Length: 221
Image (tube, rainbow, N blue to C red; front, side, top):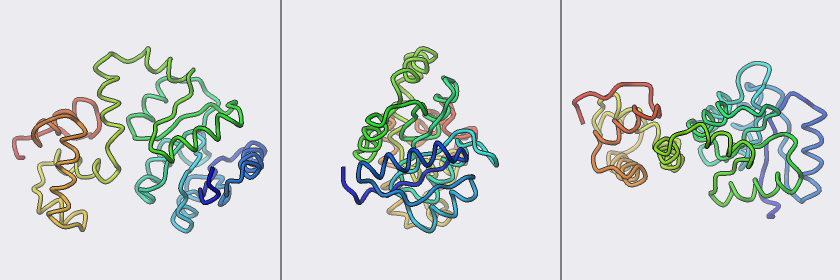
């Protein structure tokens, strides 16, 4: 593993967090620090721009799922791995929907932690076999296929998709996100390719059907 990988641990259980930090250091990884709350995690992420954030689902101030989503917005390049002591397939499904890059049980071995970090840095999605089997069992084949397609969308592409679902034009999206219309077109084409659809309206319908956005599609596209 490259020592350049910068890791933020977000967990209010200090004994566990310190154990993880010690283990990662032993493998030559650089731990930026330990955040004990969601707000502290956001402050540290803005300052230090981690490559990977290990986020406990059960934080004292807000859900780790919310914190992970906020970290994706603040640090789009960061890979977010959820940590949990709970064997809950519904939480796994929500993590997948939100775009988390991985989901590990806290009792995972050192080698599993290291392998997961390496895999997400290389662009793979990582979920523990136990949780993955339970979540997969709860989903229909169509839901599993949709989840795999949706995981490919970047946080910025999800933002563009939200605006498309709101009926915004390319110029309106460009103004709202402070990017050029050409960049919007590039994002839209990428969204269509990743979701395997052929129009903006189809992309919005897919997003609403699979709850990637909260809005309802309209006739403008």
